[in-house]
Image (cartoon, rainbow, N blue to C red):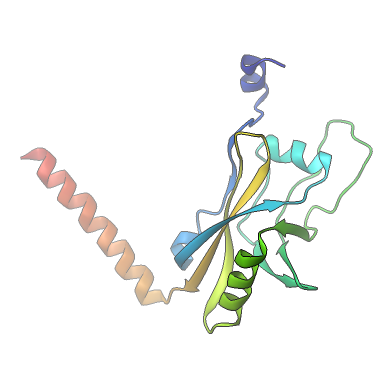
Length: 161
């Protein structure tokens, strides 16, 4: 399949397949880590169609491994016989040092692991960007919105000068 055919069919060869835009609003991201994700063939095809949802997903520890929970990947409609769970648990692949850093962050108070986006790298592999984050209070969200509005107004005033 040529590049033009892929663009016409809506396939994502590399770039962002799914994004959790609400995470940056609800959490203060302290650091990010890139992790591989274990997927089956139909799951990858559905991801390449850009049909995954990360809004309710979260990462955590299960049996000493880092896993992604509650990420929604709809069933691929291309006639594939193998089935998979749409909200199944998916194993994440990180180095041992990064895994220990993440598990240490989970054990700290008020820190969580939030998937920020899923993308395909240059080699065509699916990767997840995980954010070590702290939850924001309602007042923090209002302050961030006010700061964003002020920056936008300031840029507008400087542009109109």
